Length: 99
Image (tube, rainbow, N blue to C red; front, side, top):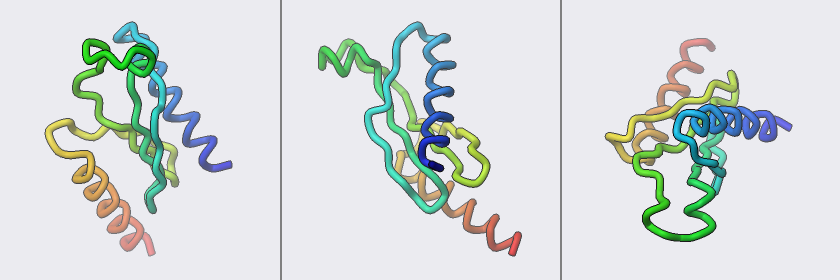
């Protein structure tokens, strides 16, 4: 059930982006981590055509915090792996400080 709620959060965030850019977006991959989930997305048109012209440039994956449901969009200036590692480390430090 938690995944469905976090997935709903990611979908709601994509809806906001769609309204800004005027393209339909779809989640194409998700992965669970200790802090929550990472959702990768693409334009529906690119998924249908496979054409390079339909690729969305600069779209960072959505990180959804499992504890708060907060949707975070990491910087596109660092790799996805670095963003995931940094967020995971921040969550770990936060948990240590709470306990």
